[in-house]
Amino acid sequence: MPSIGNYRGIIPAIACPFTPDHRIDEPALRKLASWLAGHDGVVAVMTNGHTGEVFALTPAERAEVTRIVADELKGRLPVISSIVCEGLAEAAAHAGAARKAGAAALDVMPPHHWLRFGFTPEHALQYFDAIHQAAPELDLVCHVYPAWTRASYSCALLAELARLPYVQAFKVGQRDMNKYARDIQAIREADAGKAVLTCHDEYLLASMVQGVDGALVGFATFIPQLIIDLWEAVKAGDLKMAMDIQAVITPLKDAVYGGGEPTGEAHARMKGGMYLAGVIDDATVRPPTLAPDEHEMQALRAAVKQAGLLRR
Image (tube, rainbow, N blue to C red; front, side, top):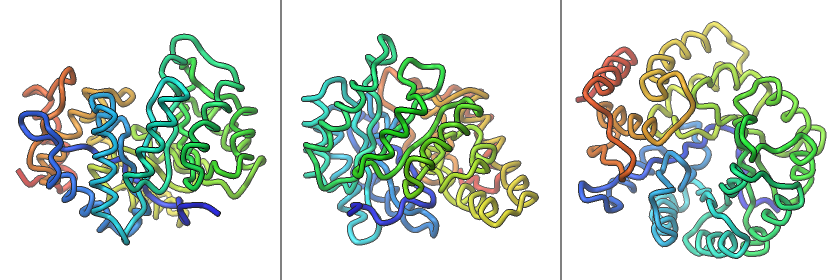
């Protein structure tokens, strides 16, 4: 039986607020988690994604972030925690720690040495199995990397993963619309009951109309209501409304992502936008990620203002 009953909707990959001396800001993290959960249309929250600066967190801190968010949202929304590791034993340890911290499901990112050396389908299946064995009661979410990377999953592998009973959802971010469509079809044909969620923060409308079940994106930690409204318009088949909402999102997207894919500095710019919108009170990021410069903050201010969200 799935450990999360509903993946269909909007799932923010939550940012991690820090104090000025770079410690996890627990009160601010709780406040952000509660604010996100207050949006009708948000069905879960994910911790320890790229937007959450996971690579700047120690294993203990990753578990602590999940503990804080899961405790704050207990009885309200389930929490998915990302597993970002290199080997089987490490992944199993992180999975066990996330389970103890209160995670209801685990997002499985590809090990990052695959980006350099590649992998075989057997490697991927062993990796998923090791994580499942460490937390057998938790769903797994397959995190699909861009098609241009050596950690990209083939249609055949995605179908095989979809047939695993403990893989319940796919966070798909191919950044290649042809492969995106083929991969969605492969997952649907393998098991139509598995949820497919876009994670194309930088072109939401274009990826939402491909027959997905929602979005699991870091951008939703900043502008959850706009993304919920966009998804509702897409579900209703109201293209005019969806295009109008996307027109408001696009300047924000450009100010955050700079016309490219998510990066560490993009996540720093997102924190800057969240600060301007009054979502967080401190936009500190952990080094070596760089805070936005004055020009970037001006662009963010203009984008936030045109969306009607400027509070500072």
